[in-house]
Image: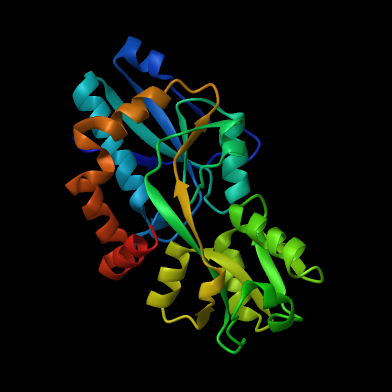
Length: 278
């Protein structure tokens, strides 16, 4: 069954709302809201300006699964503008009912205390990047000297910010951190500033490589084994259904549909790099 997705712009002052699963069951149908942060490969605009990506295709499969197995009709709508990770995260946390957050959202124990997560749908690798003129970092403990005078760019509230703060604490006390609103902005800052560095999630790095952007990877700084999931408000009753979807038919991430989605949005090279770090 095809799914109609409508883009809705929502005031930053309003909470997001969606129907609870209980309401959908009672009425035979309803609407869920999808908040998002634009992330290459995961949530991005295609050539026609429509949102697409791994997260959106998985959510479409989820909606189709619910409709087929539960005999209800679901519609979905996008909320927010996708520009800020922390904005999306905080709004989902403050919302209620059938609201889901999509993007490069790492599952952590601390976040589980304030939000509900879906099962993980992918494992991330974070890449330490600079411009190409910066000497290659041979050991993370040498970053204070190799990256001396460089400014770190970080999006507030992200795991990449925590990585940079840990580097500052453990290896580089003099490190300066400049804050931006998103990973895309952090990437743009590094591209514009030869005396800068940041962490990029693997999808952002792959996208930069595909576009021929002059970014340099420092492998000793790579961080892996983080898992991404969708988020829901703490009071959401959609969690068990999301778990059922991921577990059905031998596991969603083992399915042909899932593997096609990864290849579609990351390409063969991206899928191979992703597999290499998991």
